[in-house]
Length: 294
Image 1 (tube, rainbow, N blue to C red):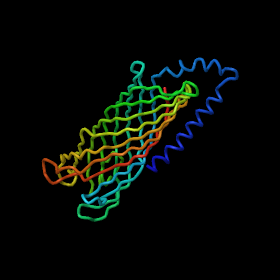
Image 2: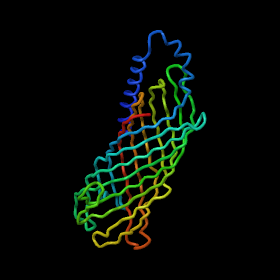
Image 3: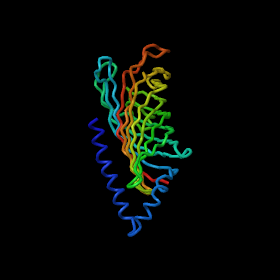
Image 4: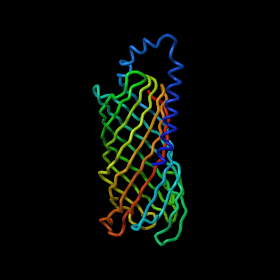
């Protein structure tokens, strides 16, 4: 929670400062009364928007044994691109969608199955897509801005390729002598609430908090490069994950900071071979994205 506060406070202060300065710079002398008369109309128009952006994520992956001892940890930066859309549905609802692609190489600190310490590189390439429908509740005063609450629910899908002991590009086509490939997928339901503070038609500050419950998890491991099976199918356990985001839009610029957790409880042994399982695993993601709004 301390980490979250560290990100929230500077972002909110910065957003308020940018929007306040922007309003002062663009407000012509003598036009305040006419803007006040038009304020309800301006703020009530909920526009269709699309955001194209680049992103950088600090990614940490950990796995634990049954006693809670850490088996391995991966840390590093992932880079990507994406698009986000906000589409009005009637007068009091909104449909949002998000799609991102990302990849990179990060540091691996763990050990082999025999207990030998290993430091290597893990390659990641993946995608995330989400859909959400929200109900818009105007709770703010009409003077000085409009505050809209957005309770909503939706679905999400995240899939990624994890190439352990990666010796090649982030696509992981060349793995080392102890490496193998995992193909992950998780589909989840999500429920949350957002808030959007509209200072003007050009500037707004937003934040949201979501809880996510996996509906389906799968990890297919491929060890065929070293004589092992290529179809080890494991279903990691389902645990609730959290997501928080705060963002700023000013005219055609938009940016956001976000924190995300991924939680997977220990799986049962795979059904085909009966000897492979996924230990309790978790990821923590701290990301920033910035781009253009149109």
